[in-house]
Image (cartoon, rainbow, N blue to C red; front, side, top):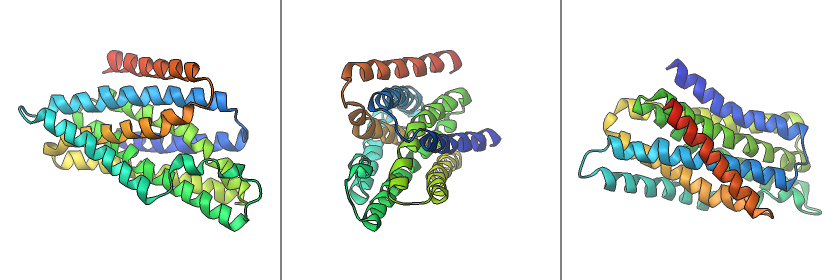
Length: 252
């Protein structure tokens, strides 16, 4: 349990680390941001497939293992799709700081909705980190959490500039970023306790968590990396995938 709690704090703390970097480097080039995000997407892609989807098949019972896994993947993706419909989409609001002369109050409302959207998206990501511990393979669970944490760093960075540009004080900006990280801590604990209460739901939970991650990668992360150097970010994704694959192979 102590390891799970430390992992939860680490996953949530990665968002906070990104926020701190956002304060330090308020202007980050698109090229650098794209490379970091594509690398993180590759890490998460491998973590989703190797650490969640394949174990879902392994822990499932024939002949329902495959149907349960596929159902879990689509349910996870559908869950985030419904969330996207309920709250503003991340890459629609990520550019609010680029508006020329917005009213401060209206701009601040948009930014707060942007932060809310990130916080809501962090919940299933945290659940994915917690569910990974249900397999009993702590090394594999830690690699999944590491992949999610790595993705949280650039995510934490991008929320700082819009809030400051909208007139929010640095102190309130920091607390808002911290809140998005705490959501992930809560999600990690929820995922862990869900699978420990009932081992029967483990295959579905693993696939569900994998589906949420695959949705985030395809719908949020990869489109956000294609601003110019498409070839560079493709190799960045492959590098991240290979690194996580190596970690799973040697530590799993």
